[in-house]
Length: 361
Image (tube, rainbow, N blue to C red; front, side):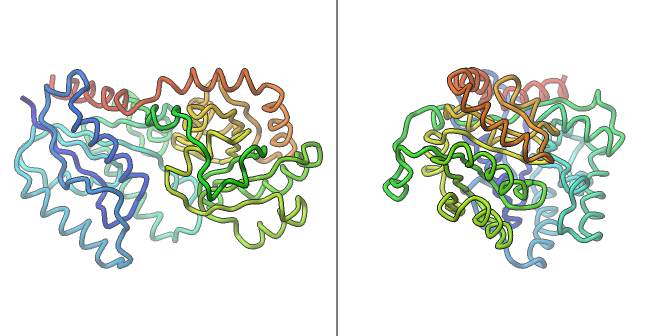
């Protein structure tokens, strides 16, 4: 039976998205219910222990990545295939024992397009990580868009890349859940939901103008934010244009609250400028909520014909897209439920197994 070593992102880095990716795939392997899994012996370099907070020490994170992880890889033994679950692990290739076939999953190359607050030195480190992708025998990306980004930014031929899309927990998002008592004030009230961080590429700066126009015609609505709170200046501008009572910020919330928040929203609004995949779009659709999102990067690919799109630099288009979503609500709900049904973590794992077979053939 072929042996496979999984190398996840070091837990000390505290990357919630990468830990979740590792965790959901680990749960698929543990269930052993997927056809074909019994043909491989899959072993993680480190066990999945749930979401772990990252170390606040840059020195410790560096030691973990460049010393401890290298030591772990060297001590792991020989495997037929090694799968790096994220793109920043190419520095470990020279420490693998034997001559395994190698695969890496690329989620996005955002820092090379939107460096944000990263320093030039930090962007240069990401560039070096990206350059090391050429050392893997095969790559997977989470979207066709990201595959093209890899080719454009690294020169790696498209024929060395396979698309293996992300998934969601279908049962979690489709099982109706009442809003928790803490959010009882939202029960029966129409609201537009916005989820995610407040970094610049999320494009939250258009919210005041979009909702000033939308709320002028739909005064019963409010905007509910889950995730990072709005920067003070942006919050002040929103409240000035739309009214303080029209904004509810919940901060970071657990999934057991986020899921019913999706389900009870009238519209999900996602104005991001750049996404490697855009998982919230699929989550909202599976929860039975109409989706309005920007027409950039991977989002039209992921949302298909089940979302309404707008140019994210034009707030007026965003407001019109919200009006359109209200007028087409039953149709969008039906399309979203059907479209999102294809995305599961079993399907993601099946994609990886297909790559394993290809590499080991």
